[in-house]
Image (tube, rainbow, N blue to C red; front, top):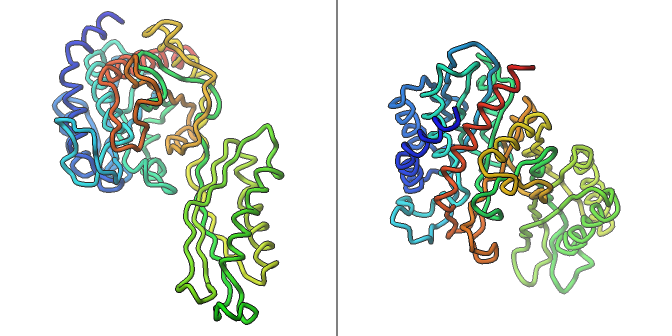
Length: 401
């Protein structure tokens, strides 16, 4: 079966690359993926793949039913873009000013469309069913698009037994795939602390309560949570990215707003953060006669890769690229990923597809969320073949129970 689908992949490569270039040219922000959704629906329709639209917003869900009954797996690709001005200079660069596919979601959709064509053509020889999940709003933290698709029943009718996801990864060279068990992304929570003081004249600080002074102390004090409340074997990050306060140079600030993010990799650490942050903020501000109001918003949890599903994914990577093409034991990135919501509902494997051209150093290649980022085109057919191999392998694994 392998030579057959590889021949199909090569035959349809120009179509797959065409999908990528079209989607790259027409990026849409999270929750606004109307034309992207329509394009994907039309592409699936031309293939003959039955599908539904409007799932969890602009989500599209296809269903490939095999010739024989069996397990049900899902393959996911995210669809949304970012509010970044593109600077790639590509002939197929974004036509939507200030919006760009700078995180590779265009490639993810193209990969899944390419895999869909192959798997649909092979459907009579497949035991089981495959759901194709084109998900909106991955960049819509802390809400995300995955929870809304789950609410709309994407994992039901038929019930999904396992799931696969991927992300093009510029840290890795084209021709490699990283996939490993355990956590593969950070929990990503949002934080706002409002520090309330009392305004007064700058020359008479004793008549007011300086919110800037209290906020400054709070920024520093919060770092002791990571240093002294988190096990050194674990990891956490508390970053306050904006500090806004004050109205004039000679007025003691009455309010200061601290906005930031909390990143963790272990559920125990994640769960203790809201209480710890509130304790430190409250008590630090009290020491300055100020008040802290903490708004802590849980976001994406940690993505957890299931060992059994990962084993199948690793075999697919080795079959495709050889033993040297499979990378494991990689550092877990501190970025958030809302595939995590799927991974908490069904056994899953989330893989990193190397997309940095061979011979180009990591330092010289633009990172994700950069206006110059564009994945190596050669990574796209690798993503397609990996997806097909992993999907077929997973159906076989689950079918054998």
